[in-house]
Image (cartoon, rainbow, N blue to C red):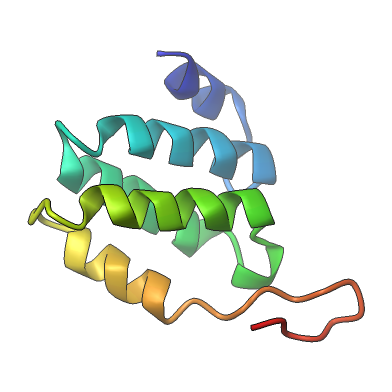
Length: 97
């Protein structure tokens, strides 16, 4: 899968790695929800919330929807981490809710 190769080629914690990892998580959500949730948790652990790009936040919300009906290990932890994620910060450093 391209996203897996792309994520492996990126430096963990970078925006490119986060994007590829979250695309991979979305692809895994239906068949491997626990793995998908763990990948998202890895992104949230390695990328500070103020450095999460809008596209990554959109992918996280999309993944949350994909995992909503999939009880599995890590899903509740992912959903809680997403719920408590700090709001994005604009160019001036102000939180935008």
